[in-house]
Image (cartoon, rainbow, N blue to C red; front, side):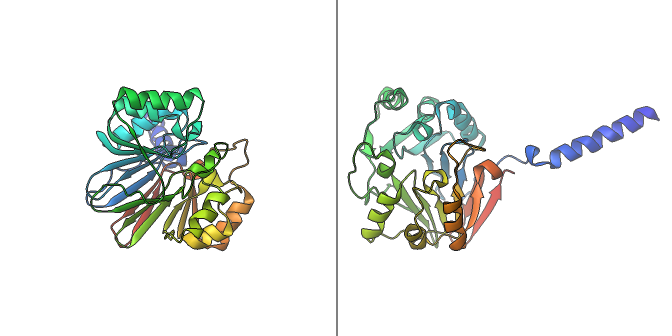
Length: 285
């Protein structure tokens, strides 16, 4: 009797653990014929994987150096065998750091990045990995369209050249349209770049906004959020980070815009699936 009781208690304990957020189900593989967007949980950094309805793979940023292997493993779990488009939004380590590991692990067909450099070893590692794979970097700037079928994927920023000290404003900003649904990926673009994008009269409206610079108050100006008018906003951010991201200012701006906010520090990897008409959202926890 005692043995049976112990087994029952163990089963109950396992059931309880599986139901807790720490044991939440891993993100599911992309659905065929739909646009799947995964905002990967890479702590205080950015990494976004996209599977297009036609089956092409896009990776935007790769988190810090220490997250490179995690990004590779996540991509493998999601069924990725090669990558049609890799985008480095800008040279900051928390965006470009893991891309060299991805370049080593997968066949990458094309790499896009803004025309700005950096002197860090992390950025040099990325450039060396691109060279090792015998690839050249294509410029990411406003007006450049990705040659992918089934979706419209166009860079809307940067609209101009900035000072080399303004690396965040150099961020490649990509807008993807799938039928009636749209997504805007902003990297770390700050207010200066946001203002220039608005002035350029390019369409910024998107159902889903990847919030700039991890929710810092140097990004997500009220005017920019109004122009985007997102239904959903995603903040890629590390738990209890030393920067104070996301700031209350940014959270208030998004709340005033009536956007539903998701955060990787609270929700883990966040998945959006678009069939061209409606968008569904799944979170890891």
